[in-house]
Image: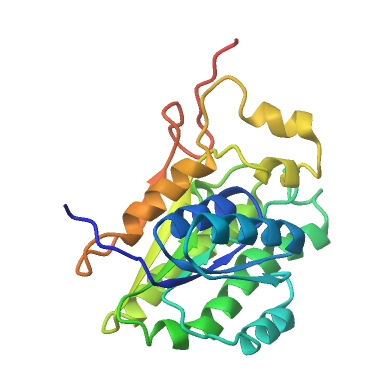
Length: 258
């Protein structure tokens, strides 16, 4: 009753090859949204493109793109043939390690900043002129509960996600007279390959993060993003925090011993 169709719109999804990005892409496709999918793993994007184009009557473009490299982002946007973009899903991001800051490598710290902060603001700045031409533009930034709660081993990651949140809030104020909505999505513990990347491929460490409770899954985040995108044009969801039932904050999770 209160939903508004997004069919026929075009969305750019960063980090679309797996996890939340892939699942959000599938959700958008099911709503009849044309897609521009960008990530480093082009073979996964091509498989996703084939799946979505066969299942839904939409257009899908794929771009091999490393979001830690600003020049690559600039070149990718310049080479877009169709620059009609209504929705931007700023999903590309990562955490590297959970060691104390003074033990973490400088390169890991800089890589988180490059992808989570620099990549996001470069892509947003380059696509914003096209989104502003949309009658109903929408930018969705994937932040985290880590944006609101500092924790040991998260000095850089927490800082980058706070950056994402404040960037989105400031942009919303700057665009107050424009037909563009800005939403910060802040997931809690989501069982994707996020922790596997964080622990450099150590599956045992990654799996232990989600043992003893029912975590969120990428589908849960996509479901809430669908809700945000399909509200009536006068309704703007500025921020949404999504946590598992047994999660009270970024670091407080009730786990059983089973």
